[in-house]
Length: 413
Image (tube, rainbow, N blue to C red; front, side):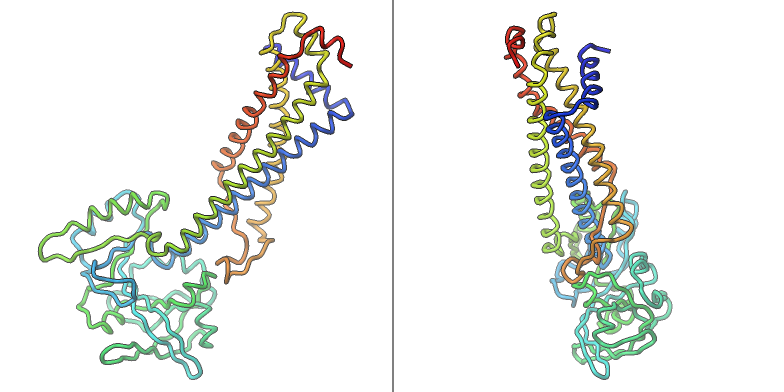
């Protein structure tokens, strides 16, 4: 054990037994660190929770990547492509591809005896991944769609069901504006509620065969493919790889385009990106405040130990060694504050995560409670980063030790 650490340890032990002005100042500094790291933990957990939850819901209605005809525009009346592409096998073989689904979208009007509403029908086949909607299913069941026979069963949102006064087992007429206009009857077998109001009030999920027949398309033709990946953080890389596989043009083949979910819904993801700026502002403010609190505590500690500094120098201690004593002591105080801050911050996050204490308006925030994402990596980065930055901030003030001489310490009262 080096003697600087030994002296710092003795100072820590003595600090617990003393009382007075310096102890109060140091207590305030430790409390400031605890509050600061707690605020940072809660802020990061909430923002990453928002981003993860809303991104997951948007992707649940569509996919991370969509592959459509190059001539298709942003409307829900699409230009068909073949559902049996030669590159599908290569796409499935790509690392990180979770699922590939065929789909058709078509705008329509739902009419009941008293109400009518414009909606978008999304047709899916028997291979569609329903796991997202199973999680948010509030009544009924998922439609059983097969590739051999069409079914009239559909999945509607709670928002649409309330607007049209529909219940499980009810049938309704849907009108499609085309030449000639057509009508189909569907039956509600399931109701979902994701709280993503912008999408809930729009989508009804039906058998892809009905929409293919309504469009007059050949067997196997679809609006496009939906590709889901394992890591949304690598979305741009996946898009480039998918484009290389399916967008190579050869004469007589369809020209395809690849669109990421961020390009399809830029407003939502731009809003989520703005949350990152808010977090960075909070982190900078909290680290700055806690750092200056610790600097104040360190200066008070140095002034209180002027006699000790003089004695150490008189027996041969260098300025560097004396600074290390105080930096070791300050590091202990920082770690103590971090431990208490982690207890407070993680406790608040766990309470919110499992009990949903703080409620939100889903019409504005797309969720009913404040979402929490507890990531061990984020917690470690915050703690190590805060400790490192505050220790670095204290190096400059510690140089005040070099101004204190043994003669000065003897005159210090």
